[in-house]
Length: 170
Image 1: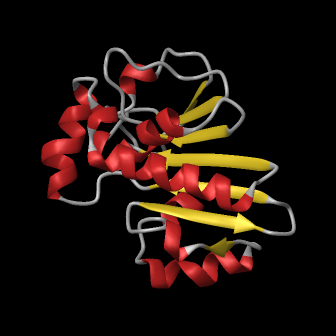
Image 2: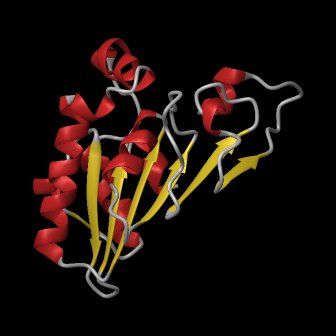
């Protein structure tokens, strides 16, 4: 549910996160990634949204497809914000999550001690699902298909009569 919230405008997200004990750090968040901190649990939750605009579809998604995502500004900005959040909060537990393009970014920027959770993560031929990552994908989703045979991938059923690739990805 928190990933779904990450697609809403930041001003609309704050109350939802507060209900779950998290503070939205607006200084380390934007429409592409959110930094959430639970001071009672000393837990950092960092979410990365998937493709949000034409620039993502025309530049970042193709960069992912050819294995060049790490060289994009979208990736670098997300990595910098996560590093700054870890430095600021010194969490005892960090979860990095993302959907689609955001899933691949989350997988790349999460540290070895972090828990990484992705949903219908984008893949290219050279991507691997990391040992500290659990990837969830929906049966019929084409974006995550290249990762479907990897270790730590859990395929969820699709409630459609047939595997609709558009609704499967949502």
